[in-house]
Amino acid sequence: MILAKADAVVRGLVGEILARFERRGYTILGLKLMHVTQDQAKRHYAEHDGKPFFPGLVDYITATPIVAMVIEGEDAIEGCRATIGATNPIKATPGTIRGDYGQTIGRNLAHGSDSPESAQREVAIFFNDQELFPRAHVLGDWISA
Ligand code: DAT
Ligand code: MG
Image (cartoon, rainbow, N blue to C red; front, side, top):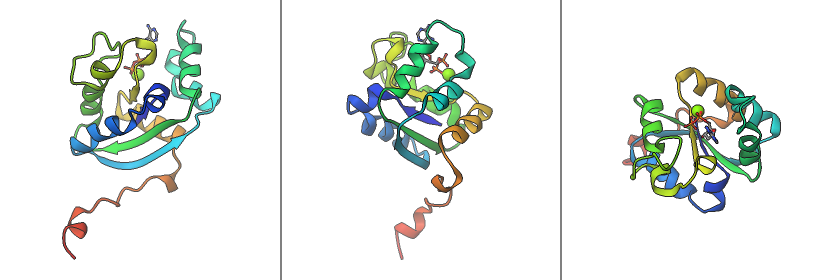
């Protein structure tokens, strides 16, 4: 699961971010602009609870609506994290989302799940079954009819 976090939304970078995943050939199964509750934010970032940056992190993703997306593809976790870039934008390679658009770790634009287990856990925090469309992308039907 990918999040375009508050800074990405406010800075008008959602299209840029989304396009990078589309152009890599990933399939979008779910996509929405949403307000994240404190409870969702705390559950999403539970692994960081207790760290000094945790309150700021929760504030960051609850401050404005964010864009949440579920994308699928071959080795999508690894591929998406490579497209997002290193956690600290200063260390992120130019060409990645964070390397191209970010300056500091506290405003690093995007989230990407780090394992299939986290993806499953995170999707359940942000989406219900009616918001996921696993069979909406049968290309052949839209090339000829
Ligand atoms: P990632 O988002 O690359 O998976 P992470 O899971 O280690 O990184 O951390 C989650 C978020 O927490 C990260 O995107 C930005 C913030 N963060 C991590 N380490 C931090 C630090 N040392 N200072 C401030 N914010 C930090
Ligand atoms: Mg992480």
